[in-house]
Amino acid sequence: MPLDSTSVQRIRASFDLLAPRGNELIDEFYTRLFRTAPGVRSLFPQDMTQQKKHLLSAVALVVKNADKLETLEKPLQEMGARHVVYGAKKEHYAVVRDTMLETIGSLAGPAWTPELKADWTAALNAVAGAMIRGAESFEKKAA
Image 1 (tube, rainbow, N blue to C red):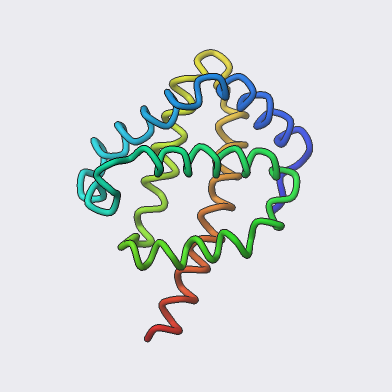
Image 2 (cartoon, rainbow, N blue to C red; image 1 turned 45 degrees about the vertical axis):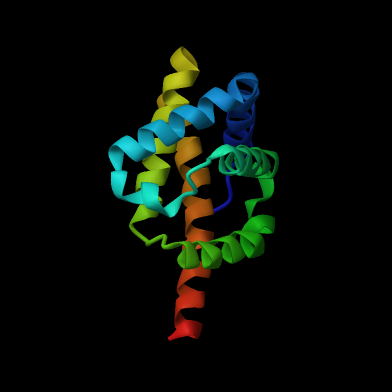
């Protein structure tokens, strides 16, 4: 389901607020993720420098394309297929989404409203949905 223009504006405004703290956002996200789901730590490289850059770029790309997330469907499906090879499971997506929401909310402070949380949830659900479709397609082909 596409995001409406108000949701897109809120997501972009919140990311503009957070972008100067992008490294902090990503560092905090991974700290929270590995604390919440320690079992996923082994899916990531020891040196997280490149991984953190990739995630920040991916979040920025989602924000930039928030008004047309469907254009990201194919690359997100491809990313989902790659994540199967890395060991990602369908159940990891909800943990990642919830951890990202908590992290954005923590850094956004009073700007984090129920509406903004719903906007980010919808965007992250769209991303996860595309990645899961790619993962499932990959798994069917591999079977």
